[in-house]
Image (cartoon, rainbow, N blue to C red; front, side, top):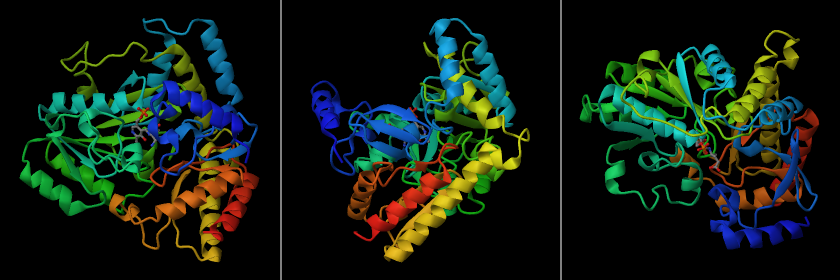
Length: 435
Ligand code: KE4
């Protein structure tokens, strides 16, 4: 595939941007080769600067759940921008967004907007500590909650991809209150609470971890986390930056029937513009400045253009609830597309006689090159990353853009057609046979 212009741009980018990228995972360091540059996206497709068309399963890491450049989002952004791009004083969109999130997510009685998922997770942790007056936080190996100093410990996503789960530049004191447990492990969490009586402020968890690929909670695991935190006066924080409004209208917590104390959001609620949010029980959220002693702020929090884009995304997603035949319901469509892709990829791997564990939950998925089930990051590390690299590039040359790392989740949108998925599975069947 001709990528001359992308290579020229990357050479230029390397002169001015560390690694040539504004976020490490985009650098293709996990799969080799140079990243391509995109200057147009629409629906399920992106086009690179050399004119190559690709079926996109990264979807800007989740936000493009309706596909790229959805007309309603573009129109909303244009209309909002014409009235000004930021006011530094409350705007009506902020109220509409807060009200909608509270309606869609029953555990959220109040919510505060931020400009990234990292900010949302950082703020939720600070709030949990301020509310409980405790310092220690439990996170899970391989879960990623943004590049927050105290949470970049055995993190996932780019941190895991580079085999540097702990980042340089973080003083040991900053992570001394962070305790890491294996995901899906009940006894480990019980032991941590037993050894740290009345010291745990909370657990932060990706309910369906999507930053070490994708694996699912074992039956009862999320219920266990809900019970043990309640029993010990600790808060349960669901990091739904990736799963929120994707795995169900009310996110993973609706899908699995769990009511966390706090939740963080991002991606979908910004429609592709910079956004994050954290919310939960009013008595906890009211500890935030200006009401309470926990300080948190942001120049562009609740930005009117980002809110307009996020509202257009959400309203289109939920607008299908019961108002049209169920097959048009966005979430029914996303479930169906996810199931179609999973079935096709499993068949392709079987016919090529290549061991692949294809995990899928709704419109999120990950294929691991291993013959063993993957229920946590330790299992994920068994994946044959050389095979993954070859598969990634084979699919890219076939016009399919998958996440450029074994340790990332893939995403589907309502714009992905059955034909897109048939093409993807057909390409996979061919590429797998070359591995
Ligand atoms: P941001 O600060 O990147 O908006 O959100 C951080 C974050 C928090 N929590 C979860 C569960 C997340 O998945 C993320 C960010 N996800 C990565 C993809 N694995 C963003 C991609 C990137 O870092 O470039």
